[in-house]
Amino acid sequence: MVTVPRNKLAFPQTMKTTLRYVERIDFVPTTTGVHQYQFRANDLRDPNKTGTGHQPRGFDEFMDIYNTFTVTASRISVTWMYEGYNGPSEVNPAGNLIQRTDTATAGNTPALTPMVCGVHKGLEILTAGAAEIQMEKDKTAWCFINSQSGSKTQRMSLKVSDFYGKGTLVGAEGYTGTKALSPTEVVFFELWCGRVSNDYASETTKVVAYATIEYDAVFTEPKTLGDS
Image (cartoon, rainbow, N blue to C red; front, side):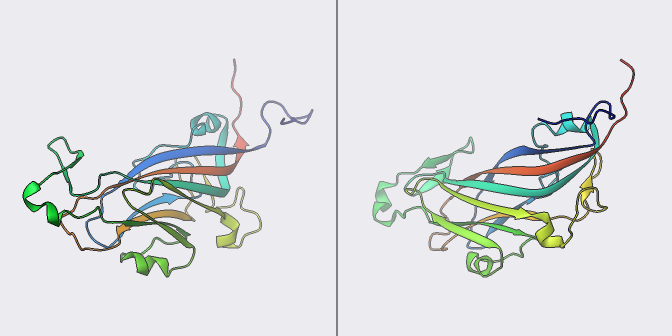
């Protein structure tokens, strides 16, 4: 329960809470070079780096009350699922993966290529490269999946102060955002996914990821109440 001081009207000066953001991402790797997707780990206004996402649930309501926000920590959970069949698979006219049966070349039917999936956190996004290149880098975790292994979940967390070395981030310039502006000092969560081999270059593969991010945020500068 939040207690407002007796000499303070309306809303408390600061409000600390946790907001949740969820997004689905489709990965369709065609080579061992990984595909990458980034989220801002300390930005409630625009978590998706592409600028095409939405805001965590409740963000608009809190920004109706407060002018600024600061994310102090966040956590990501990514569930990876292989979409497809034991090979070969192909895309039908509707754009869906289907199983192709070719009895004339049944002896050459390959299994779906296994995939390597990973999560990274840092101030910069990963450069392009194969999975083993990404696995050598700091603050990176990975797992392997195939068409028969079922889903796998990875988790990662961070404190913004661990990257910027500031004792007090709340309200600090560069680390605080508004309804119209994002923080300029950014930390990223990055998803990546690639094939473990190019043995069957024509094979169609697809991995679906559900990313859930929970932001620990402090809202500050309550707006002045108007007449009712």
